Image (cartoon, rainbow, N blue to C red; front, side, top):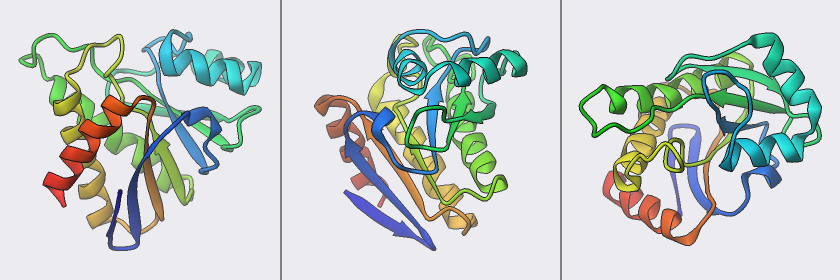
Length: 176
């Protein structure tokens, strides 16, 4: 499924984000940029040691913010590392932090002059964010960004499993 907002196409895809050929892929990182499980582990394994070397130089990234490194051995030239919130029931500012993780990743993409980006479902794995709510926040943040900015041509959400894809698709239909 996809929709157009100004010059930006936003689309959903099922698959492995490490295989994406977009200019940048987004890593659902931890605050220490120290590698971890899930998407983070897959990106570091597929991209090789150059990514971790740059993460060590950067040192860390606060929740809701984003930093950029090489893509190493990945097809994507860059990895944007963003830290989503750990879900604690929803009353501790998690929604704002998750929206900021997407918006700051998009801002960094545009600032670097990149044309395309692929996102995983940030915070939906071990950080425990409810997928329906996370999908709505993610897609709303991307749509709002696309309506206000023209630099990015493609924003793709790459969902690893069919259940997550289906939930993102339901939320996307509500927003468009």
